[in-house]
Length: 306
Image 1 (cartoon, rainbow, N blue to C red):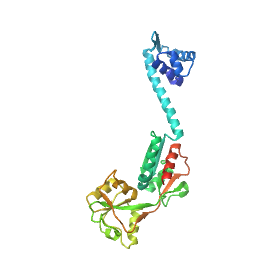
Image 2: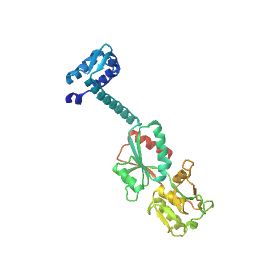
Image 3: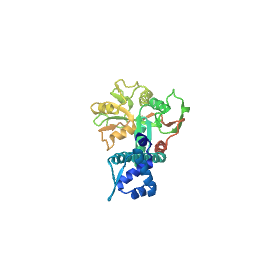
Image 4: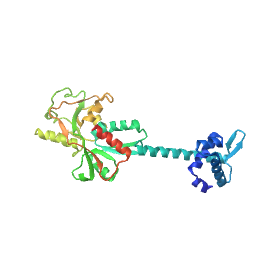
């Protein structure tokens, strides 16, 4: 019996399920696109291997025996798995299924990756898509290891650009965000000098936004703020802003999201006289990998939005 079950052919499994569902060999043969003699021989082959009948012939049709019920139930699982496998392979080849893992620094993740995923999901709802939001050094390493299909990030100084296929993306602008009741919330043309003595919430030293803020203060001849809480967690940033006069530096995309009607955080963007800009990020993929059809579809959607 073990030998039969391990060698049960898909056509035999489909036939057994069809007989159990329809109760007649002729109808089951038609459903399986077989002739009735071929269906009869296939059923007899399985019954000989099991040394037991799978169905009883009755005036009302064919009814499963106890053994037949067990085999039919298991065979149905085989048939369903084969159907699912066929569907998954067709979806994979058509770019509607499979797995994609994309990385991005925070602003592009919100501004471009998320909308592209939402668009892709309209035609590929079974696609398994994961998004890693991290600093560029982590994302570039993940790309080189093959853990990501593509990323929106910068190329760190110690990473070889020749390892990537590079497409231009965009500059990243910085918003300075405060709570709605902040003393400077309604002011126009605020100077960075006016913010030097306030508490700040910033990313770690070396992060692009932190570098841009430091460069902004250096450009006006002032040292960087001394009262700083360092974090890359958006939740911590929000918590720090709610009850204090802290200033948080974040990308425009993040600021727009948390202050949009969908989130409705009670924050305000400061009207800063001298804009703060971050070095451009890029659309990167490894030169040594070929994207799957699904990954290529998402890559194309992101590139189109950029």
